[in-house]
Amino acid sequence: MCKKYIKKIIPDRLFLKILYKKLLGKKLDLRHPKTFNEKIQWLKLHDRKAEYIDIVDKYTVKKWVADKIGEEYIIPTLGVWERFEDIDFDSLPKQFVLKCTHDSGGLIIVKDKSKMDLAEVKNKINKFLNNNFYWVGREWPYKYIKRRIIAEPYLTDESGVELKDYKVFNFNGESKFIQVDFDRFVDHKRNLYTLDWEYIDAVIGFPTDPTYCIKKPKCLNKMLELAGILSYGIPHVRTDFYCIGDQVYFGEMTFYHGSGFEKITPESFEMKMGEWLTLPCDKTH
Image 1 (cartoon, one colour):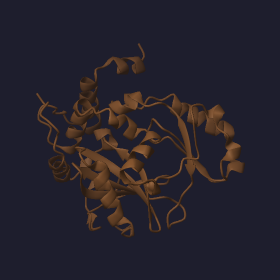
Image 2 (cartoon, helix red, strand yellow; image 1 turned 90 degrees about the vertical axis):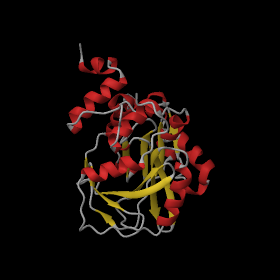
Image 3 (spheres, helix red, strand yellow; image 1 turned 60 degrees about the vertical axis):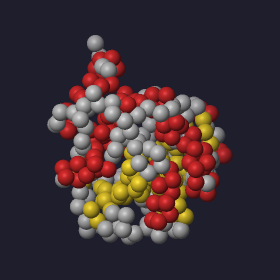
Image 4 (cartoon, one colour; image 1 turned 180 degrees about the vertical axis):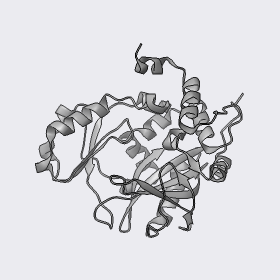
């Protein structure tokens, strides 16, 4: 019996316990969850609102967000297709980004369409389309997303070489800190900052670099304002933004950062994150 089949017949609760122990080396306490990662696993099992499906869908979330904060913060969609063969590349600009609506990390950056290896891109996209991200960490909304491909403009920030992700961690509508990922395609690192842009000496998943200077973004206050609006009424959600000059653009919303399997150090910081995350009701027994 293949491992993929065995993986799919294991119930969510048991699967999460097994994977938690394997990746974090600790027993998962779902009856009395205290840490951030434990509570993320609890939310996967118990906080299942239908609107979450539209929110994690990279295409439908744009309308959801535009209705909340306005169309001006949305990165335009250049096209949406169900099959790679349907993409009209002639209609796309020289530079663009392709991504799938139903997964995480499935991204193809095209900086020069004339030099694009069409066969390679097709293979990657079809691989993404055939992947049901739900099975990776049992993040249930991904199980129900319609699988599609979207194209967006290729954008860079003041660096001219990348687009820094400002990830705002929100707990019941209140922003607590910001994570910034950089050098993602070279040597992935991430730094954490307070709302006043002071460096936080803590690690979530990837190494930090306190010597790397990330200037306080001009759009910080606006990002925090928008994060509060988008996260209102949600126990925990990470809202991602880009800042290009004075303009803020919405990136995505994530309910289960790192699928709740990224090691957080020091432990006191993960406990603090757990304290910020108030579970919606008592279903722990």
